[in-house]
Length: 425
Image 1 (cartoon, rainbow, N blue to C red):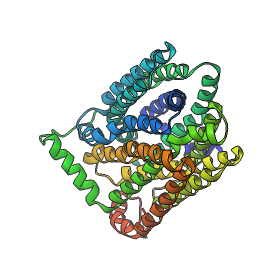
Image 2: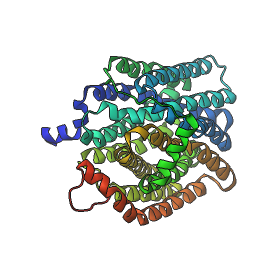
Image 3: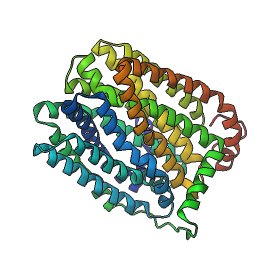
Image 4: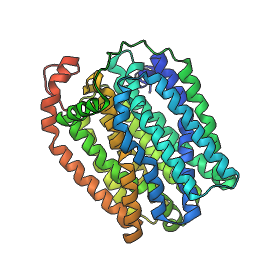
């Protein structure tokens, strides 16, 4: 790639605030992925129960499902920069508490459940504010898609590095070291947020009640076909994706006869696939055509799950995890780009709260579904069923694309994205 191509790929970094945010996230997210791997391994080591893995996953995501929509109303009213400073500080405290309990030998399963729920509540406010704050950091709207793709790139680059580091840290020391390093890593994003100069944005005085704002957000999102279909497809794939996230310790230890390093490598393979997908999206110059990309990525994710569920060979499993990671990342980031492009600014926080509910709020139900089903029919059969449902969902989403084209065309023409010839959203 020549210099001009690299500049185009990283064009969102020319915006100072986004550049600071990008750098802080690049460090912090590695620690986040280390903690996620260590939590799963610690829970399975303490209990040996796939069902309890599902319970812990449920506790981490149910607060997002319950509170994200309310948090979205406040996100449209509050200063998002200050909200992120508060949520990142609270997440650091949660990680350090987890590290202390583990390193002191005081950790029990109920601690994992409670602290997971605390982090879920923090994320319920963090995610809508974080997603909608991206627009405030980008002065030129045509760079928004690239910024979202670069967010996915650092998220999944951390997903590539974090699990690998976590596997070695667990083998050499303990899960507590991973939690401690995660707590320390939050310093990077907090420092970068403090260094920002967020634009002073006039906010209209909100006189409506929170519940009225909540109703307005739901009516707007689900009354507009493109937003409705994107959110529903996100919810389906996210629900099914929890199966492999929750059951990965079972595959690593019981099916592939490995240890924490095996689990780390599997997650790293998914991260490598996601990084590849992120680079593809960052290289795109337009939002046009992302509807087809969402359908195709959902199908690729489903195929990857099905093939991974049948694999008993470690290298083949790594290849299938690569497909899984690429499919889920491209589907989520493409959906984010479409939503951020077509949503009205005064409802952005509420729509992005529904996005966070679709992406992470389905987690508690997907976790319990995977844990209960795996305890009855086994982990491989559970992944097979989830993959099949993802493929069916991709088919039905593709059937809705003509309707989405008709509705989004006037928006794209008004924004100057689409000239005279109709394209797909």
